[in-house]
Structures are given as structure tokens and as C-alpha cells.
Amino acid sequence: MKKLDPDVEKRLFKNVFVCKDCKHKIRALASKVAEGKVRCRHCKSKALRPKKLIKAIG
Ligand SMILES: [Zn+2]
Image 1: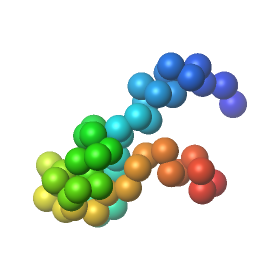
Image 2: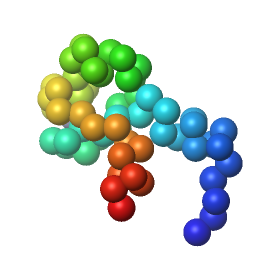
Image 3: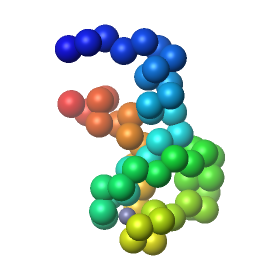
């Protein structure tokens, strides 16, 4: 697997969240997501998880 440049990784994963319901990606400030101010624009769900977490889990 190609190793990602730290800057590229930051661009791809920083402030990027994934809707748990419809799997759409949403770019939003982590602080706003934590406050529950961000909803999925596709299904209106508030169930978001950080994209980065996928890597950490497996
Ligand atoms: Zn959604």
C-alpha cells in the first residue's frame, strides 16, 4: 500500500465525517460535530463518525 503524505492525509481525513446511516461523507468542524450542530445533508441524521476511525479500528 502506498504511504500517504502527512499533508495529504490531513486533507483527506481532517474534519471529515461519515454518516452512519447513509455512509455519505460530510466535511465539518470536529467541534461542531461534537456539539451536535452538524447533520447529514442527505438523510438528516446526526449519527456521524470520524472518517479517521476506520483506520484506527482496522
Ligand atoms: Zn446520512
